[in-house]
Every structure is written in structure tokens, then in C-alpha cells.
Amino acid sequence: MTQDADIIVVGGGLAGVAAAVGLARAGHQVIHLAPPAPPDRRTSALMMPSVDFLRSAGLIDAPRELGHALTAIRIIDATPRLIRAPETLFDAEEVGLSAFGWNFGNAALLARFQQAAPPHGLETRNQAVTAWQRDGALGVVTLGDGSTLRAPLIVGADGKKSLIRTAAGIAAREHQFAEAALVCDLDLGRPIGGTSIEFHYPHGPFTLVPAGGNRANLVWIDEQAKLRGIQAGGPEALLVSLHERSQRLFGTMTLASPSFVFPLSTLTVDKAGRDGVALVGESAHAFPPIGAQGLNLGLRDVSDLLAALQAVDQGDPEWGIAASLDYAARRAGDLARTGGMVDTLFRSLLADMLPSQALRAGGLWALKLLPPLRRQAFAIGMGER
Image 1: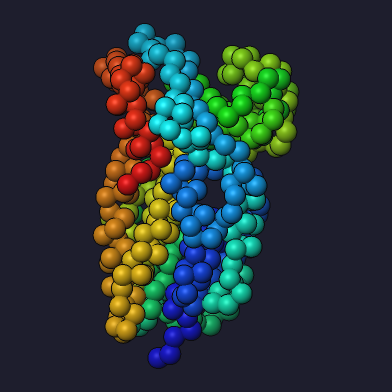
Image 2: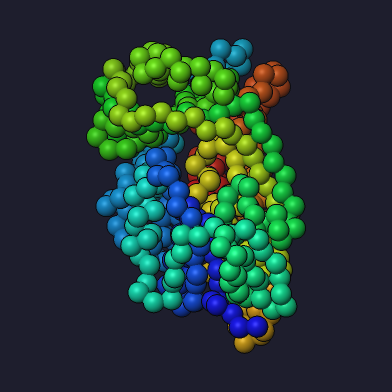
């Protein structure tokens, strides 16, 4: 049977668009299936390795045109626990950097990725996929209108409930937390500059991320029922809670956007690819927004997918299968390491047991006092490989 493209990418989120555009810019014939979705009002803090990849792949130009530099991270233990961690400041200048990364609005980043699409080699369709199967050397996807498309490699970027992952028989493990994340934009009475501020509370961090001027993006993790109850009380009730949680360190706050509450969960897969299927973004991994790893990990997926395709012999009729296996091998270590790190960190924030409190506090004291350990933590947090 004839193929319709070299690669079919399924999913219209940031990871899916980055994969489709990046693969097309690398010279592959790509069909991108991206059903319409509501605007993504969230933000993403991308570390410098991710920003460097986006620039090298031609997906963005100067980051300052889209985002705001993250020059420092300040952690404040605001828990009432018996054993508390010290306040800790991580400054990018310690490791010779002007910034750890950049904070981008997801909608602006998505628009920039789309603008980077090449004039040829990429066809985008606003269609959903209803089925996947393997037919010899080709993957076959069925669309909502019953038509089919074929390609040697299918990229699943269709989120936590990935149809591509399920149809390909790639096992996933998911855990739902009682916690959720409330996000919104705030205008502060006093600016935070380029410093991301994390107040650590018993059910997760209350984080203010620089968004330029006096504006900050809030990511507040707490019990889902509590967050929804506060949100239901209206803007005034929400502002009362925000001032309390921020300890009024930044003056009077005002809401600059509506607030949204997102349930939190973790998702891991046995492998990120096989049988001519490669999973990127939340199809392959998901976890709470701790340590700014979500989209950073998804962009490392795209980077390794490009490398796997560069290494494969596309003269082989089954090159799609070979590429998917190579990709899975490249991603295995990073997915296990990053997923384990974020899960351990999040659970340590929730732990009430004294030994856990002592370990966490001792770890932050070590990071505060030992420069070599701080530098190693910087490298891990930034996703350096």
C-alpha cells in the first residue's frame, strides 16, 4: 500500500506542534492531525537547554520576544512542621548563566511554533483520530469521517488519555492525587523581578513566576476540594487566600485573569515507542508542575525523536519501526530519572512523617551550604544531559 506521508503526528498541544513543525523543518513529509482546542491560558517555564533546542530547531528566535527571564529561584518553607527547611536562594549567576530559563505564555509559544512551519512538507488538518493499527511497514490511522491515512511512523502527542498509546498496546500507569493546581495571573504591589518564589505548604507549593513588570503567574497546589471551594467563593475570597499564602510579601495583589483549577496526576509508560509508534509529551509522561519539568521533558522527547530519525536508514522499508525502537531507547533513562525525581520531590512535600521532614530539611541545608551540590542540582533541574 502507498503511504500518505513519512510521519503522521496526532495531537495539537505544544509538544505535538513542536514535533510536527520540527520534523517538517528537518525535511520529513508530515501530516499533522490537530483537532481544535480551547486556548491554553497556562504558562511554561522552559530551562535554558530547552530554549537552546527551540532556537536550534528554528521554533523560536529571541526568547525575550515571547517570554520573561528566570534569573533566580527562592524557596520558603511555610509549613508549620516541627522540622522546617531553611529559606534557600538559587541564583543563575552562580553557574555563569544570565538566566536559568524563560517563562512563556503557552498560547504565545504555540502561535510562534505554528509561524515557524515551513512552506512545504507539513500539512495540518483539524481532524481527530478514532483508531490506529499496523499494516505491514505502515501505521494506519482512521479519521472521524472514516477515511484512513498511512505512514511508516506515527507520533502520538494526544495527551494523557492517548488513543495512539492505547491502540498500540503500550502500557501506562497513572496515579490520581487528591491535590490540584490553581493557576491565574496576578498583578503585585511589589515586583519580583526575575525571581520565581516558591512557598512550600503541607499540600504543595504556592509559586509566583515572573511574567514581566509587576505581573506574576500563579501556580498554587493544594487539596482539590479546598481550591475549588475558595474559587467558588468568588474573586474577593480568592484574593484573601492569595494574600495569606503569599504572606503579604509583595503588597496588594489584584487578579489579572480568571482562575482555573486542574486535577493532578502522574503517568508513566513502559516504553516511549515501538511498532512504528513514538509517544511524546503527556502521551508518555505526566506529573505535577513541580520543578518546571513537564514541557521541558516533552521538548527533550522531540529532540531525541529528531536524533532517532537522523540515525535511521530510511531506505529500509521498516524504518518506522526501527526509528520507534531507537527513540524508546534514547528516552528510557531520561523518563525514568526525571519522573522519579519529580515524584519523589512532590511526595516529600506532602509527607508528614518526621524522618521525611528531616531528610527534606537536611537536603535543602546541604544545597544551601555546599556549592558543588548546588551546581549538580542546577544541572539536574535544568535537564542537562
